Amino acid sequence: MGKEVKTNAMRILDSAKVEYEINLYECDEFVDGVQIANMLSQPYDMSFKTLVCQGKSGEYYVFVIAVDKELDLKKCAAAVGEKSVELIHVKDITKVTGYIRGGCSPLGMKKKYQTVIDMSAKNKDKIIISGGRIGAQILISSTDLQRVTNAIFCSVIR
Image (cartoon, rainbow, N blue to C red; front, side, top):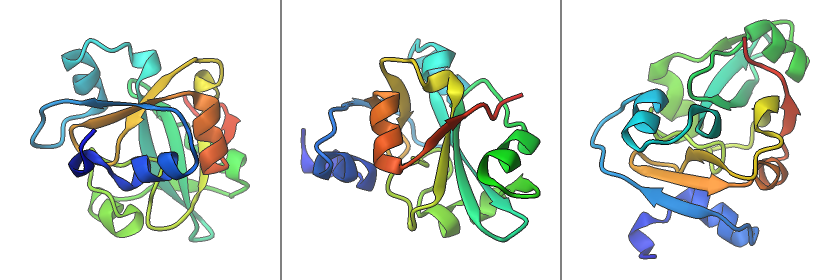
């Protein structure tokens, strides 16, 4: 593996001595997770996207859900102990996370935010998350991801 494909997310996993696989694919611009899963013939229930919300308190939260699902914002708020949460605007993704849209990984953001992984990932041997840039994916066990991000598992989808 050449150094040029290592992202912050991958460096964090390396330093934590977590086993993972890298999957690289050709893509020059943002396309949603469903399109990527279709393009790579990956099952939706194994392919996860990273969404960032802001709570009423002003704090940011990271949610990891299957690419074909939508957040239930009430469940999200309850999971993180907020009165309410809202998805951040696309224009704020880089400012808040350090990643660009389509390359946002739950690992290696500018700051460590409270992270919630949807319960649907809990019993999967491997899930697919963004590798930290467009065109890179990480295959990782959900329990390893949970451990490295200090996440909780909770049902947060509609």
